[in-house]
Amino acid sequence: MATRIALLEAGGTADFRQVDLKTKRLEDGSDFLAINPLGQVPVLRLENGALLTENPVVLQYVADRFPRSNLASQTVEARYCLQQWLNFITSELHKLVFTPLLDPMANEGARQYAHEKAELRLGYLDSHLQGRETVLDGFTITDAYLITVLNWSRTSGIDLAKWPAIKTYMERLLKRPSVAKALADEFDLHNAKLKRKAET
Amino acid sequence: MATRIALLEAGGTADFRQVDLKTKRLEDGSDFLAINPLGQVPVLRLENGALLTENPVVLQYVADRFPRSNLASQTVEARYCLQQWLNFITSELHKLVFTPLLDPMANEGARQYAHEKAELRLGYLDSHLQGRETVLDGFTITDAYLITVLNWSRTSGIDLAKWPAIKTYMERLLKRPSVAKALADEFDLHNAKLKRKAET
Image (cartoon, rainbow over all chains, first blue to last red):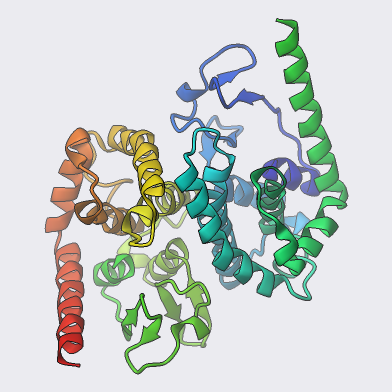
């Protein structure tokens, strides 16, 4: 989803392959774990055959491939600042808070712990977003990643009403054409998968 | 600890300030949350006054500041590969597995979940480390971060015997002069803190 948003913003294209994250199979039945043993998306295969994994890395690759899109600062010092936000999103929000909440195998204690950890982190994010339209100046890959993660709050029992700046940010971002299209595309793919399953 | 190792490898220096991570106070009694609202170390204050947070970012800064130390690949494509490993360590190992295990406030379910998540991730790491002395070619900041995180296994109930390549890697790295010195320095600081507490 985050990579999809970034590519739409950049005007780039990719040959998308859907992965069933439960069975770890591609649509042609082949084994996704042979491509990424961690079983996670995104995986980006470059033109030279190399594979890139991990959201912050794939997103930086897309931004660097299309530098005129301004999706990532190209100066050294501003890049550190961008990487700080990517790392906060990937480690503090994605893995510590949302991974257990989205995981149907997670036990109740793990879910409770994720909710406890959410308080400080979402409070910190809320302070930062007060009076801001984007995480940094202008839309960057940090926003592509953050809106993807925040969108999970809708299905993971995190009520953003406590954090009004996050809520406003999310409502604004969900209306942004790239984000709206990426969400609609993933929604269609999800429904098509459910339909195929019902038919078999 | 990871930054300390990287600085020792680079021959760089920094003015270290100890933070009590429980009380979130510096040694002079000042409020660490005013510096980093997330209450986490490391925080690096640059010569121009800017603050850097998040391990992967602080480590890349140290590597870039001392490029002759070869602590991070300086070519674009190799840097993506290095960032993949930094992101794996920070998100999958540090936050998902070790944060709950090191947190005295974590509930039993959260600890259990962290142990469940450890299996796939340490298995993946073990496969990668088979026949390798370092994560990438030569010692890099990925090793400084990884040995710091793996060292927590000793106090968090993770038995590395199941993963012999990790165990061998860890034993070798703990003998590396920079790692041994960083550990000894932190051990001394910890003991001095306990002594001060006992006296008050």
